[in-house]
Image 1 (tube, rainbow, N blue to C red):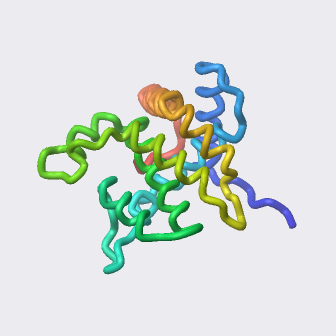
Image 2: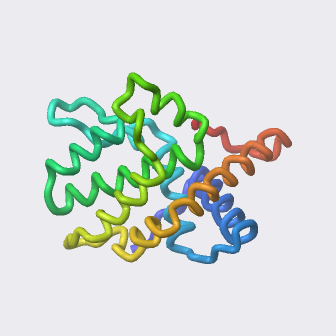
Length: 177
C-alpha cells in the first residue's frame, strides 16, 4: 500500500519544522521534528484544539478541566487526553505565547496553571500508560516531556519564520492559524 502524498500544508510545516529544528536549534531528532510538524497541521483546525469533550459533549478548552477529564478515563483514553494536554499546552506556549495571558485571566480556572509545567507533566504521564498501539511511542512522549521548553522555543521560531516569509511574500500557503 502506497503512503498518502503530503498536502501543501503538511509540506509547508514539515519544511519549516526541519529548517528550524535542524538548522537553527541543531536538533536532529526526526521523531520530534515530525511530531511538532504534525501538531501544527492538526491544530490548524479548531476541532484539533478542542477535540477533548466533556460527557455532555461540550468542548474542553481549559487545562484544569482537561486534567479532570483525564482522571475520569482509563487506559488508552486516559493516555490520549494526557497527550492532548501536552499538545495543547505546547501549541499555545510555543506558537501563541501572547494568548496565555488571556487564557489564564482571573475568571479562568487556568489562572494559576503553568502551561509549561502542566505540558511536561501530561507528556510524562502519557508516556507511562501502556496501550496496545503505542502511537506515538512512549519514548517520544518522554522526550517531549524532557524537551518541552526547547520544543516550545522551536515552535516560536517556526512562527517567526512563517511570518517572515509572509512579510516577504514568499509563502503561497494561506495560513489559517
